[in-house]
Image 1 (tube, rainbow, N blue to C red):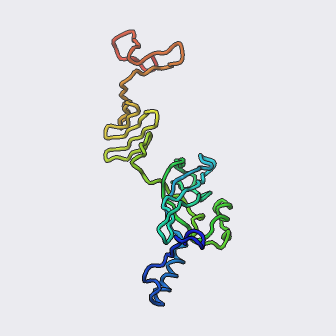
Image 2: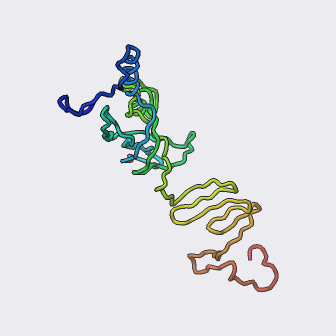
Image 3: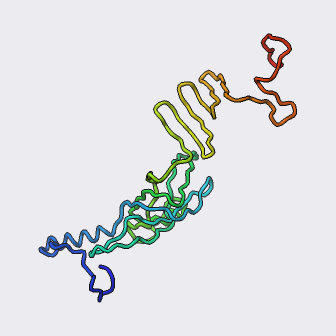
Length: 225
């Protein structure tokens, strides 16, 4: 139903056949009851609370699929607050990549009110209320890639190795020839090849470069000289 009781545009969600038999009537009531229980949904993050190493974040979410009444009129969902965020972690090892406002991702809805367990640092607790299948009890699992999202830093697992780049253009690339850090290649035997200059004590007055330093003879330098 939509609008006030005297609204001429009010329309039921009943289909043309839902009232034709007792079976159809029961099916309609069952469908209406099941529609109150959410399982998964897609939402847009409108706020992020916490984050970093010591404060696992929660997010406020705007569900993206609108609500519709029997007349086909739609309206936006309200904001769902305080949704916990999952992380890739095991024991005391974790990859931290906190969500940002504007991210769009998937949310799963737990079957019971988990607010008490969440408040207990995810320890055992009684349900916070009698609600079931509520969007308030969702958990954020991660973003859905969009064409509009242009990554500026990444970890890329490729067929021939791994590529890591940050938003400053620094790169670490692994391949069959070894690791390349901004063009400096360290092969699997530990040999180093640098396209630029290597300078020792660059901040001191006695700095010296690998290519520019001299030896008193043409012989190979002795260790420690």
